[in-house]
Length: 165
Image (cartoon, rainbow, N blue to C red; front, side):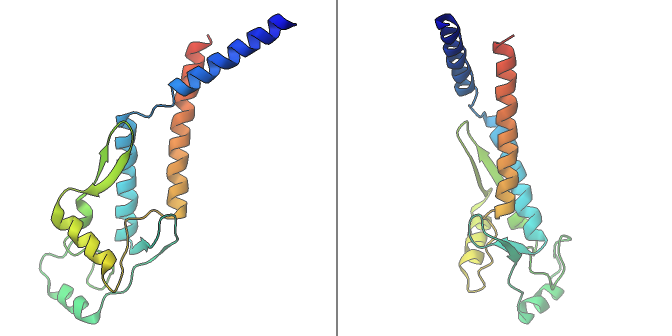
């Protein structure tokens, strides 16, 4: 009976090592995940929605003023991703188009490719209209968590199959 317990303990230890050693997330996964998050933020914002706080509720961005709508009507380079009366943080498209992900082997960060776009985003979040769009909603966070969970489970399953043939 002791031999069986010893073998089970060895197996449990080996399984724990295999799982621990394979829980590393690589830069390519973070880059892919970051690109997905950028698309989520871009698409939601272009549809006219923002999220005030992390894991908050998606809700419509504050409406545009009539003065700004008139400006947009006359604006010659209005993005094809919008129309003059739509509050979706898209005049030319530059700010949302410059969203990017920066990945390492430890994390992914969503940022902007240039300072002007980053400053516009900050101004929109801090202005009296508070058009906050860089947070993820609770539902978006759940979807992203599922992607990470599936990735890690796949890595662990492959490692276990390899290790315990």
